[in-house]
Length: 586
Image 1 (cartoon, helix red, strand yellow):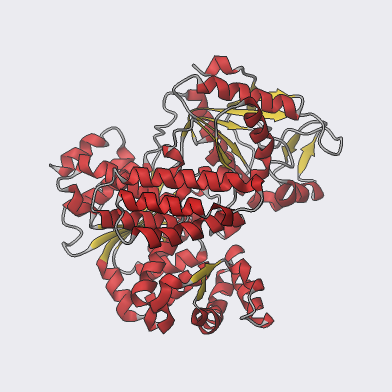
Image 2: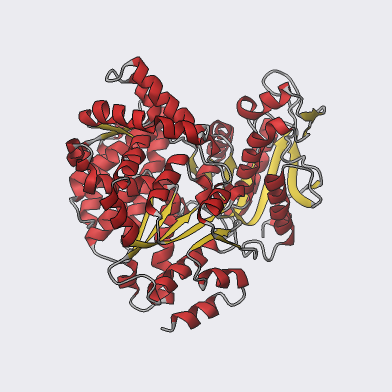
């Protein structure tokens, strides 16, 4: 196969993608809005580099990303697209390592952790905890807990100097107290990997072994992820792909202007993808995409105009009944739909109505911090390792599923939380089912499944569900697509939330609040918080391949006050178009 000709033909109508794929620049930044074919272009770039001799025979490409879901998408895309681009795709697949930051760090610790602490030879038996759980540990003095909190605060507040000042203190406490007790934190995993890559021999090996490093979704990188990445990139090729508008993990410490940071650090060439494939046949959605991006990027009055489909209802009950009517209409077609909420609690009234009306749906409203969620993964990993024994053969996978089912009562005690088990169990079943289609040996399938479970990545499997209706949060929807998206409850103090945004905005009089509406005045004090809300807004509407529908109700809230439509649907120059389901769902 002539790789140059194949790629020219494949991307012939997209100059920016071709510039990226055929560029020989050592450092490249790709800015790519949703729907611009970033993943396809990235796979083509990897294929070309592997085929033209840039990557030596005994070297590899490392593709890294922030989230587990993003890493799984890259894995799937490489397996799907490589056979159409290159000969001997199986051999070239083995030259691509794919990981999220924590997964890559764990690989380093398994291989070299003993250099830091001999206890790391038992890493598979370690208990991994969140830093927020340290307050419950008797192993630490109160002063040590304070140091850990200072470190966590530095990450979340994106304080680079404070992080660098406290990282050694954090590591010394972690190493002497926790690692010696077979415990490590999620932050500690990255810190330990950074320590390993500070060792010259290890650093030199990896910077030579991975001759090209591609980092996807770079806008979500935290300071620890940045420090880890910086230790890897020395003289090798480096590509950073992302979109600052889609940064939705600011609350976890995603660094500000991540792409601008590496532009300055590495003197990289910028290539901007412009062609929108997702909305190329829907002019209204294309204009809406550009409109929201403009507000998210500039946080000021936009000269652009756009229109949303917004149905205004008079009560909670009329809103959920309208949503149910639309969902039933979609169920009668070949399409699927996601109902996306800003926070899981918003979905309870929709769940109740769907169940009352017998509407089949997949409930994924749980949070990654829910005890039931954490317990499921702990038990799933235990039983997977116990029953599958290094080779993912179907009989062993069935045995694993049965063992997890037998421990269902350990995962939840409140029957209202049973849906968490049911949801994750169904996603695990789907993962095992899909694994049958993967190329490679049973050992390779085992490694892929283990990667998914160890990194809590089952939500990635939502795109393979048979259910045509999914109810989940905007954050969980990142990277997934449905034909239709419904965004309900577009009310002030709901989305954005009162606690995190609206309360402060109200205190500084950062909005014009009318009888039943709220309009942002773009107060400078609200820029960071509102930019994050704009990003989630953009991510939500770009999950739709065909159409996004908004609903809101201006009935009375629990305190007897009129609910207001939020500032997101009342952006200046954003027009409202009333709609009926039959006019848009065919």
